[in-house]
Every structure is written in structure tokens, then in C-alpha cells.
Length: 238
Image (tube, rainbow, N blue to C red; front, side):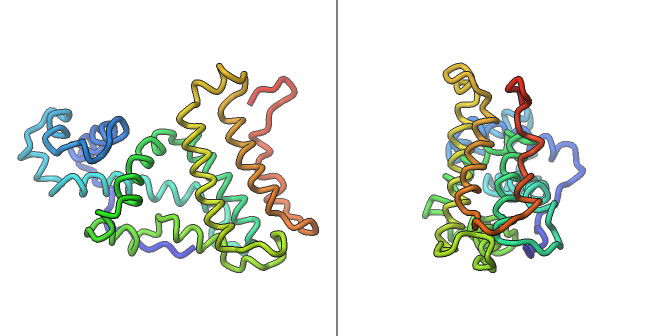
């Protein structure tokens, strides 16, 4: 997938990093719209004047946090197949596995993203702002770009015949995020209630999405072994 250069880059300034890390915690714990610049400054132990030297408004803070996740997200999701010729089915397999790996590597991202998505991607007030326009136009970090990529050359014989590529792409992206949202939100409850590790449930959910899409005559070593290292051992442990 062609991903454009990010406008915003990580800065080495320690104070800027401290501001972003502190704001990130606030945005994970609260609705983004309920967090003010004054609250961010107070949590950081700095004046509002100092905060405004680094960021012009809350949107700029949120945007930079999201972009700071971006490069790692893209590497986790597509690093295994970047520059390689792969089938539609393999792209879906790598995407679903990547979503699990993102949860394992940076679970805090999902807490932030669900607030971010509600405020910027699902809220019709925001699509006309500078930051959301750049989100769609510059980064490629959107559900639409992901759907377009995984459904490119969809009818290549790797997925079941008769499927609507666009509908499947949307179902895969939203189904994966839906599973993550529910399982992430209940990662402590699931083991207590059902006696099974939440990650095992997450893998099972992703694997079942994938199984239902495969053309019966298609075989792929990459896709068929995509979950091998996450499978349980004989004792039922991850």
C-alpha cells in the first residue's frame, strides 16, 4: 500500500514528549472533547503559556499522538508483506494477524483510538477541520485506505467466489475492530467468567473471520500458518 509521508514527526524535545505522554493518558481515560488545554497543562505541571508554545490547540495534540502511533502501526500491519506480491486472502490474513499483534505490543493504543475514532472519525462536526482533512489526505491511516488495499485484485481466486469485495473489506476492517473493542474492554472479565485467556478468544475471532473467506482450492503457506506461534500448547496455555 502506498503510504504518504507524515507531515508531523516525533520531536526529541523532552518537554514535548512529556506533554504528549501525559495528554495520551488523559485522552485514554476521558472523552477527548472533555479534555481541555488547561487540564493538559495542569496534568503536565506546566503553564498554559508553555503548552501553547508547543501546540496551538487540543486538536494538534491529539493529531500528533495519533501520528506518533502511525509508523509503528503500519510496520506491524504490513511489514511482513511490504514490497511483496501477495493475494487478497493473504493481505486479509496479515491484516488480521497484525491487529492482534498491535493489541499485544501496544494495548494502550486501542484505548486511545476508540476515543479518537468517536471524536474525529464518527463525528460529523469534524470532517471539515484541517486536522481531519490531513488525516484522510496525507497519512493513509484510515479504514477507507485499508479497505481499498486489502480488496485490490480481490477476484484473484484466493477468496470464495461470489463475494462482494467492497462489502467483505468493510466487514473485515470493522469486524476486526469490533472484536478488539469488545475483547480489549473485557480482558479482565473474560478469564474470570469463561476460564479462557482473552488473547486466545481474540485469535479465535480473527481466525474464524479468515476461515470463512478462503477459496477451497486455494493454498497459502503464509496464511495457513499465520497463527502458529499464538496457538496454545497441550496444557492450553498461550
